[in-house]
Amino acid sequence: RSAVEIAQEFIDRAQALEPKLHSFINLTPEIAIAQAEAIDDIIASGEPMPKLAGIPIGIKDNMCVKGTLTTCGSDMLANFVAPYESTVTAKIAKAGAVMIGKANLDEFAMGSSTENSAFGATANPWNLECVPGGSSGGSAAAVAAGECVISTGSDTGGSIRLPASFCGVVGLKPTYGLVSRYGLVAFASSLDQIGPFANTVKDAATLLSVLAGHDPQDSTSLDVPIPNYPNLLTADLTQSLKGKKVGVITETFGEGLSEEVAAAVKKTIAHMESMGAEIKEISCPRFAYGLPTYYIIAPSEASANLARYDGVKYGFRQPDIDNLLEMYAQTRETGFGTEVKRRIMIGTYALSAGYYDAYYLKAQKVRTLIRQDFDRAFEQVDVLVSPVSPTTAFKAGAKTEDPLGMYLTDLMTIPVNLAGLPGLSLPCGFDAAGMPIGLQMISNALREDVLLQVAYGYE
Ligand code: GLN
Image (tube, rainbow, N blue to C red; front, top):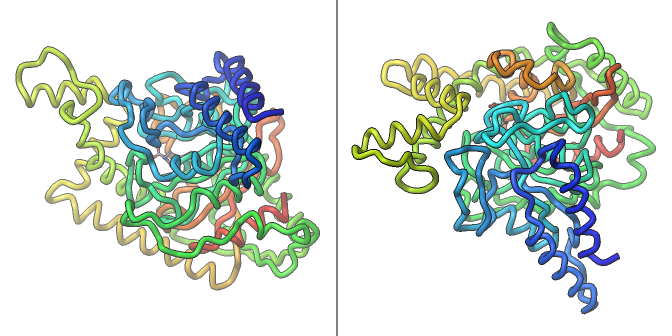
């Protein structure tokens, strides 16, 4: 079949599933067909095929694609057509992928269930009454439901790993700085990182090899050699994990963890041991401070990043106001949703004179302590493992009135962002209701090679 025929099949499938799932804010069939035609031309010319030739992909709608709507799931950007291209989407297009659409997300990536989107929630393909996780819920659901083959997400506190776990797909948050953030709408700049969703570890590795690499447009981008990740995943790994040291984080098996999740994760660890991995228990005593630390740092950075939405430069503006300050206030009052306003208020408070030392500065110190726990752990093991989340996907609406309960969903993923490390979510079983369970695997900075190898070996 031609690339155009394949693209059309995925578009048809997505159009049929969207009324139930709502994984996408916008489908982009014209772009997909044009990109697929270009691939068919390459095939006809006999030229070498680029890495992702003809592969249908979903792009989280907080990444700018020039000339398309980039809404960030917010009324504030409901009419925002990106005037420039993000580095990741430029690389993806160059690699020959075919963009099916812009995936749904929690407004400005703030949330754990994709219920905070101004354009309606996404459903979990395994049970339409459950949430897909968030904030990259659209990207995860689209891959799980076969509306596309791979997708991009962004992860500030767990937004790739949590939806990957809830939807039963592979999701990877790379080392901070490995993937350019140029053209990613900023949430919390010291934590945000773009990464892949896929059905298999090898597909995730292939997409990562396209996304990764130095970008002078992002001052935090790392200038390091990028391994050919999929080439590192050799057949012998699937026979044996001999020589790999795996640490189990003690603190993640505490209170609040569902028995079914604990059982599935422990079974996976036992299986890794039977494949030759050396299993060690590792304590990360400051892990527990991750959540409160994150909810000072992330809202502080968000309050600064979101100050630009004032109705002047771009996006929504409240009409019929004749006074400038009132125009700012009314634009922000109408344009932002409840969770985004909550974050802006928390962040503005934490950064204000007199509170800065008590909250923001203290949080930055704790962030260093958390990083030190990981440093000590990686003197002893190659990868750390834990559950991704204390529970499997919950029912839609179950936590919408309970922000703290929602925040707790990310308890186990957040410390990884604070330390800037890579984290992967790997499907590792199902609960009694048939909902997927995810294993979180963490490696030292820039050791995506080891992380992918162990995940591939087990998968
Ligand atoms: N759920 C977390 C939050 O709401 C993490 C979101 C993310 O990683 N973008 O902040």
